Length: 436
Image (tube, rainbow, N blue to C red; front, side, top):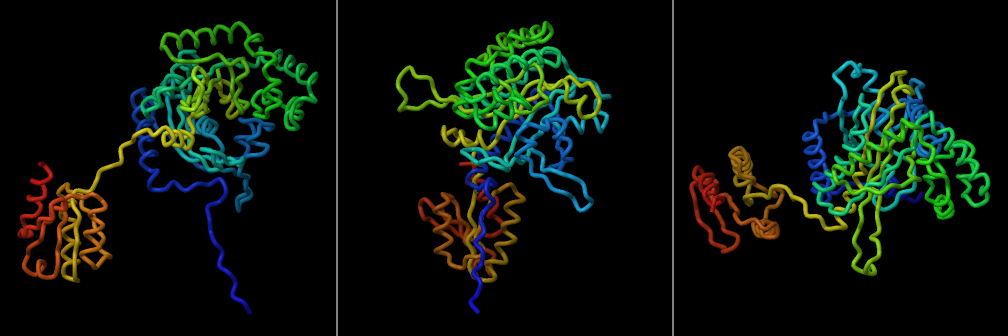
């Protein structure tokens, strides 16, 4: 009977490995987020990766793409309907209500970072398992919060190293004024129903605002003449949005009004915004507008607390796609710290040399010297070759004879000069040379 071929394993579609060479970019982005969060008084919160499926059905909306197409749903052994969390805001609101955080001094400023999951078509910088950072302000109605969140996101991008970023802003109204806009939108699209994509024909009946979020070319063209939310705002929403724009002007934040901007989740009210990086292309004709790429978004979600836990919680938040941002960090050749480099290489030969080298490594490390080794290698020549490739200036060589005599060889990798030192003096000698 022929031997069965072994399966060749690869990462699951849409699930990407973050390789060592990419880690400095990720670490730098995380540091920029942490640093900015602390500067603005945000506290870290982490929610479970697994949540109750109904949490997102009631918050995102039964007809949203997330619920209809994108959730990773499964049934637990106990019969519970669970999902891998597709977004971060609903779990934070759930946690806020569950743990009585509305009894704390308000507003509460929280931020998070972590993996999320959506079953959608992978593309450049977008995956089915993806990472986000997010900032949420819970328990505050003032429009100043909306503007400050826009400012925080742009400041994170500046901290990372991006220079050309723009916010697009809009107001989608509230439950008082949105029905009028919805009626006008439905009438417009019903009149043009044969010009929209197959999915949007369903959305016109079930969730017409989602039509404005469609990326199909036909729908994008038709959207340009669609009714605008700003024409239907009630006095309260008009006043709120007016203040948001005034605060953005005061902060000198680059923004553009986008009267057709909506978000893909049902819980948004009033202010919504998205963030775009503009990438300069040398081949682009002079005077032409640089192409832009979405890297984050957010808005106000005053109705979410009521939907999840029958609590009125005025809130706003924003989130950034970390893969997308790292993708453009690399593409735009943003320089990031590469982490501490080793100070000294330890090369060893023979059993005695290897044993003494193990202890030497720990001794150097405890004294603040960063050693590196390849103890699995037995050839001094191959070890020196590795040290040279790593660009390390100092190598310590410990063979059988040196181990027995209590000595060690210090080699200058640039000049090739080797000197013999007593083992008990080598730490001080390395420290002295590192200061030069």
